[in-house]
Length: 270
DNA sequence: ACAGTAACCTGTTTGC
DNA sequence: TGCAAACAGGTTACTG
Image 1: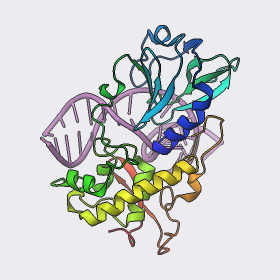
Image 2 (image 1 turned 180 degrees about the vertical axis):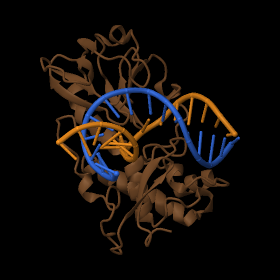
Image 3 (image 1 turned 135 degrees about the vertical axis):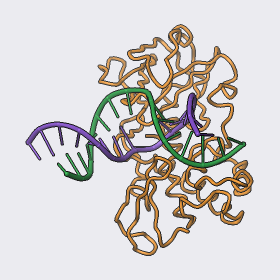
Image 4 (image 1 turned 90 degrees about the horizontal axis):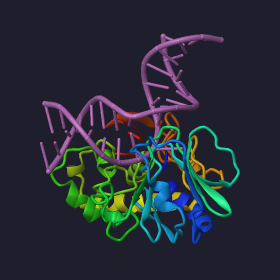
């Protein structure tokens, strides 16, 4: 479900409710997620105070004195603040209970992850090989161009590779390629530096815009308060098969590239 | 090193 | 209408 804007929207939404709050209890109803939820999570988290919530790629990092709680939402995960007495629904796998409210992790497909580390979270196996944040100065067209040299992979899966740049998922990959006039199946190694500079800029723009609108709700993404994000109204090509291209009015096409649906305009993208 | 594919899991949509 | 196949916002792990 969530790409970077949805994870960032979640982070901003829940932060006011959990910052400086002490964990009263941890309830694990389902420990079988993408990786097993640590059996000692309750023991680690209980009585800890959440100092901050940071984000690296699509991982949320809950900072405490004793270590970091790492949460990834996978394809269908969401975090919501609920009343402490709220009765759990199906797929409400984990509760982090605070004094006033409860943070509830919901994830039907269970591709998400809830982990704990006492060490530097950035050195965690899942985080240490990640590429730059797309909204950082480190991420540039030159960065993309440099890493694309000699690569035959299609540019769409290339920009979705978290070792190259993090946070660009299936929606925003299609959207940023459209804005850049680049065909999703062009070989990554055969794109000029000038075009990569345009692409990097468009990735930043589209992610920033999506964050401002609270992310994209296609089916079940909800913010911490249960409301949707409004970027779905702004999509140019994603999920727009057959609709007129906003630029040339030709119908938008869909094609499977690297096992993912890709949406584009044959007229405007080369 | 790289490219392509299968896998993890459940719910919803699509097509016959 | 019913049933089965296809598909869904992510990422790792395996294959050749």
